[in-house]
Length: 408
Image (cartoon, rainbow, N blue to C red; front, side, top):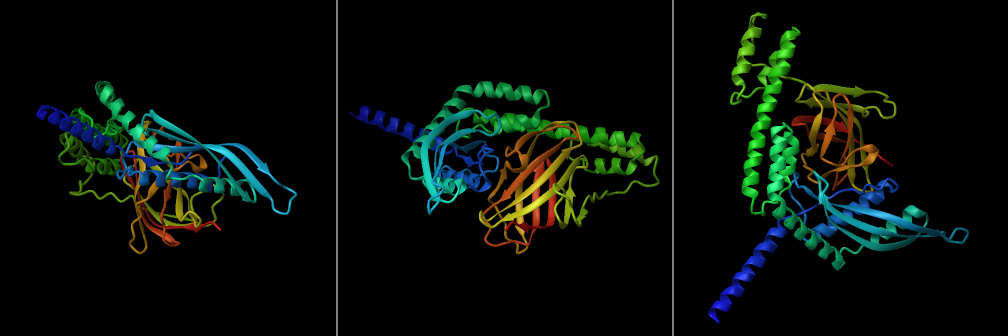
């Protein structure tokens, strides 16, 4: 009898551990891909998914979270009663939720629910009514999140060795950012996470070495071209603890032979004032703002900064140009402060204007890449953003005093 009780207790403990492991897997809501939906409908779908995730205690707190839930809306039929006293529009469709990995787009689960909505007015009004009929208390959503967590756990527990082998190949071929994103998607609760952490440390160390070697290579190129000032700026960015610090010092000594004096400290000031009086369509934002980019080989343009009162959000439409060797890069917005010192933490990305809402994307050399950053949960209309920080390709982009244009 005692042995039986002990066995039952052990079984319960195992179940609790598995439940805790699954609960450590959380999700981020993203915008749908549907091109035929207006922004307000896309925003409404994303907000519904956020509510579903929150109600099921499955919301991610880390900006590096790999698991996302993306909604989709397939509008199947639209009927209208035109000609009557009140023009009523009825729409029917299917809501689809897809849980997947942000980095490799592996799909772990899908859920489809039939919906309908009607409203006085046009199709857009009916679609908004349809969104209201999405009940976040529906038990199907809870089951979807629970089974998805289980499948993610099973996937990583069964494929841990394959994942590490693939990541090692990425590191050995200098695909460091890709390896970091791939390894970073592994939940901390899987048994092999300690080995995954060691690989991430190795990848990070390799990344610092590559970045250092690249700085030396660029500085040596500027040195050969006679651009000693830029060469010194690049060499000054090499940390004293870096593995290539001796090479940087040797190259600095070589440059000293061609100039009167090598300064003890080289200050890099890339801050610029951007001012546009009457921009044409698709040109940088009106007004004046300050821009600082930490990398010499990364171009950045702010096309627009739009405020949307209905959704209490601001959308920054930007373009980035990688002037170095083409590579995949991690791009995200991570800090926003208004004129009163308030910080905004609900920061996402949108697919508007052809932007990609993936944080990890390809950046070919000299090809503009569009990104739309969304700042949500505004408490009032802001005339400007005092400070915005964006990371792209391990470079820091700072915007200050950005004017906001509000849509009517």
